[in-house]
Image 1 (cartoon, rainbow, N blue to C red):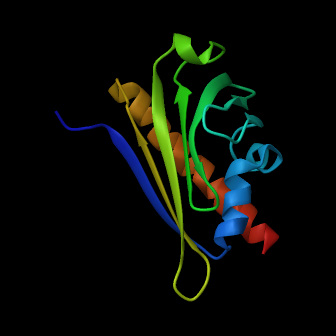
Image 2: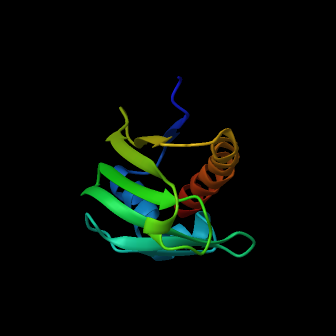
Image 3: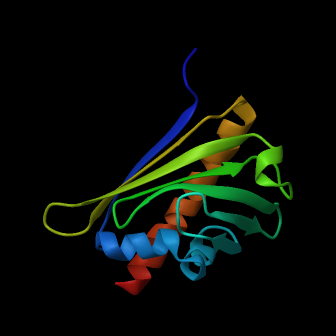
Amino acid sequence: MNERAIERVLSLDASPERVWSAITDPAELSQWFGDGAELELRPGGSGAFSWNEHGRFAMRVEAVEAPTRLVWSWVHEADVPFDQAPSTRVEWVLSPRKGGGTILTLRETGFRTDLHHQQNTEGWTEELSELVTLLAAAA
């Protein structure tokens, strides 16, 4: 069986430290990833991402290697505790781009259904375009 995964690679003009801030600071996350973010930035830390029209999705931080790697898992069902719903794993890898900037690689795995895979595929397209806009505005 083929693994259901989402992979995105972005070439960004911002430094790895700037991108790191955008993906880890709750105040910045809530500007591009949903409408609200809570994030305890440490392995085992808890948090949630909220969308006004979709609800609150619990998450748990798995790995933090500032400013190059962040891994977290989040649930597929809104408004339920982390341990009470299926989750997927999201890994962010930031590497310096030759000549300046950052290569951001995102990989989400662990989908149990085609529907969740499709929803998140569409969601990442929208959310990552908002990240690009946020970083461009700050440049």
